[in-house]
Image: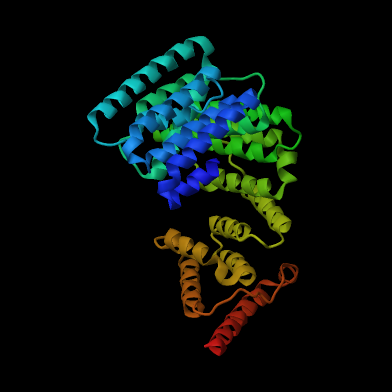
Length: 416
């Protein structure tokens, strides 16, 4: 019935009042036959009235009252499980210019906020988290609707801060992931270290509950990296160094797990690159030989499928002031990936435009011009495998790429 009502609202508004009546009867009968589903039934009845508000304008206020009444019934039944985001939509979303209606909405909002405070005294941090998550869901709804000056930022943040003490003893893996995403999103968007630390503590629960946690290790490291960067912005270098040291310790502790997973081992290589070339602090920086060994292993694991190892090997060569080797590493990637790495070439051109690496910049520029020349009818169809590439000398690779460019030009010219 709910689907029929939604379809009628879009396609046949005249039938909406009748279908709504049938929907209400159906859900009320369902409530009698299966009271255990009361929470969801009241939510669906509330959303049904909300849908009809947009269509049956003459009775819109009555539908709003009924929608509010239904979701309040759900909250009374189970404050910790009810859909508070549905209630937030009703009390915050702009309705119309009717002064009386706006006054009623304001009263409902004040009543709701008071009820939240009372429930917090009864349920503690569990209801704080439920409410904070509901505000986050409502925010996503407001953003989807592209509305401004509707979402109560300060109130939402205050509930999120109260939710920091939420630490359920029993929670499903799916709900734990939702909890992790919630705290991480706030920590990242607001650059709040306390929320990011909370996220790490929740990830650590996943580490204890599973034997396959390589991905979670990489995600924890990523958060420590975020914390380090926030501390750097705040001119707190000692704290930043400590955060990076924590990240390094996590990788050391779980290195075997990380190395056995190609995806997380790639992230490990990226982290080593960050520590070596990007992070400006006092930490134990990996040696170039260590970085090169890991990058070589990532290349082997990916069997040439990824362009990243070649770009990192290029950086290592440049760090040793060996532009010819750097160009060779780029040439390997071009042989394997051809024009599919055009965005990588663009990024490197931007990065090195003011550098002293003139040979590398010239090579990148020539590559960019080649890609533009053949872009019209280009299709990816490499002629050399990764296994073959690994058996070739530097000179053979250089000659091969020059010949391959001519082949691509001729192929494109033939298509024209």
